[in-house]
Image (cartoon, rainbow, N blue to C red):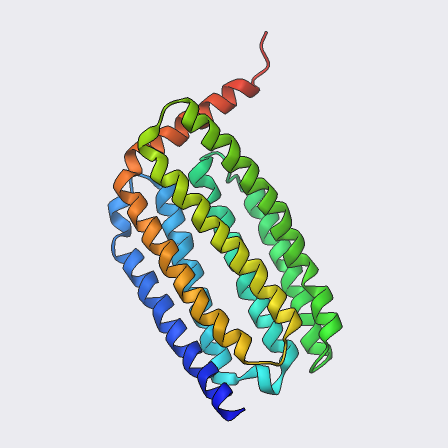
Length: 253
């Protein structure tokens, strides 16, 4: 058991360091893309995502709530995963549809996040350990993710179809990595919170998740950085698709 806890602690520290290193790498080149606000925002969302996860890992390491306060450990985990889901929606979906992120949508997502935090943290404030109540509180996260999974794939399928139809062959790499990255994000994010609900007091699943999560984020950061090499063409393509969609939705007189 002691070895399992030690490996868990080591994985927390290493994952936090890796996340901060990747965030610093993205931040170092952020100014290069000031003329591409949608892509620049996607990078910023990824930076915030990585930083918040790193802070979450360090809080787990310093206070070890999984031993002393399991309900709080679960609440902390789902809190930063929900933040990651928001960063995904605000950063990645607009890469496909530049008109996706509106002020109304941002306010609505923040309200849902506030409701989620209230639900997640009410449980540990009432009980030291309450697996059923903890799982029920996760419904806010799963409903939010479920709705946005549908939104993402509908957007992806529509936009990619139009990119192909408009013969933007030179952004095919963007299309491929976008689906691969988002499949990984969604599977890892939703799967991780499900594992938290199933194994609230075990250490080995979280050690594995931190290792897998670091590899997933490394791939996404690499892909997002590589996207910068075709940013001009890809931005023009998605903007043209958005314009076609808007024109299509305007009632004809």
